[in-house]
Image (cartoon, rainbow, N blue to C red; front, top):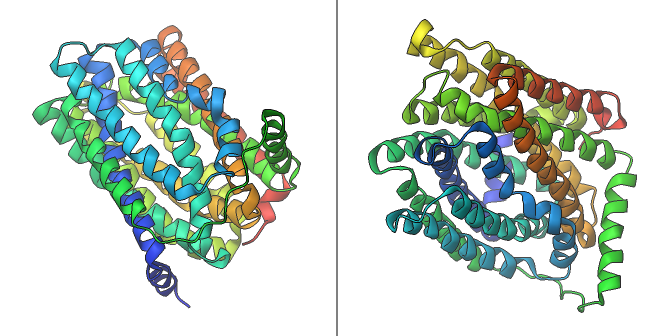
Length: 416
């Protein structure tokens, strides 16, 4: 059966079709907001690189505090109500950003409070979303289903930043966040309409039993022959990505001289690359195996950041040359993620029992997001003390370590 026919068969499952639509709409709004928040912090609030790092880290701080507990709780709850409640909650929080701006009360501390609340809801929403998908499609279709979701998200990633950059230029960064708020509201409505039979949750247990349940999930991940190296490699990857993401926005908007629309354009090219990668992910994963595909994705991404580290400023080389170099790098960056992510997600969902899905996902995500907190702070400090380009070289070196972990482990040879 061809990849197109497999994807079409998955979309014929009504529950998955609504889930896919909700994820696509939510992803579109998210990529608009990525541009809006970065421009808001760098230009509207005139933050230093260290302050950019603090703002980037604060929304992921809840993962350090509550991430593992969230996984244990999600495994005791029906996942659909969690998804609906967190979607509407995030909508309301995002609405406070333009409200604070209109009333003249928007500041870095106020934005940090909003993003911390947003991150707290994201812990439960993301853990439930990744654990919900295996209840909507057969396990043999998880690779195709994840690839389909990634394809639509990369379409959103392609168009969202360009539209976000245009909206920021037209109405300002605070008002552009409204798009994401509305997207979360629409996502909550769609998920609420999904018809799915979920098993009756376990009874609420005493605190000690909850902690034992959380520990069971941690042991499952880090004692597993292939999930353990996947987890460690991903943790290192998120550290490098956080360092580079923190540095990239001020580096692109200041030394490289890109305007908000151009910044949105180069981010959109990552979406184009991601779409190509996600489209090929199923075919590549089935041909060379999940492990080799994951390794391929992790090996390509440092190459992309070498290009960014060597990119010339637009005032010396010209805007076209700068956009070409940075855009090509983002294209390769997106391709590597598009190829890797469906294979990684499909494999780890397939080898995890349903009763452990929430704890497995929360364990990985909480440590990953803890690395984001550390990486954002490190990235900002490196940029302030050493400069933007040295910070980028250090970050891409961390990506190399992530690839080495996969290459040196049994994960490299697994198949779906």
